[in-house]
Amino acid sequence: MTELRHGTDTRTAELTRRLVDFIQDNLVQDGDDIKVDETTPLLVSGLLDSLRTARLLNFLRRDVGVPVPAAKLDPENFRDVVTIVAMVRELETV
Image (cartoon, rainbow, N blue to C red):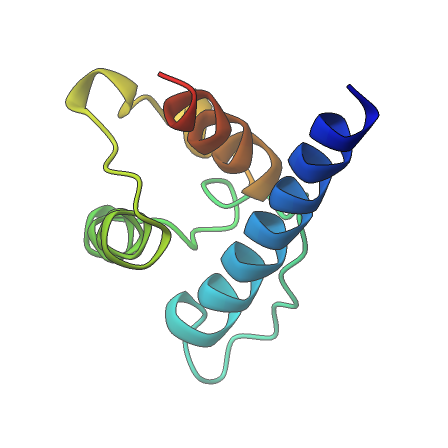
């Protein structure tokens, strides 16, 4: 059980890092003084609009290997990297 949990924690940490890096490198516009971390409010800060959300969804599908179904396209699932990772981890177990 400990090994499984450790693997899960490692996967969560990896996903968190990959998402933070993707958002910082691809969704923060030049000139914006935003340093993204796992709790940066993505919607409130304006980092996620319809185009950027589409880019994020494409990254999740193509690079992470987890397509996000329409039923999960709720703003609550995209508040910050922590909530996105939780949603992805849930979708991975389905």
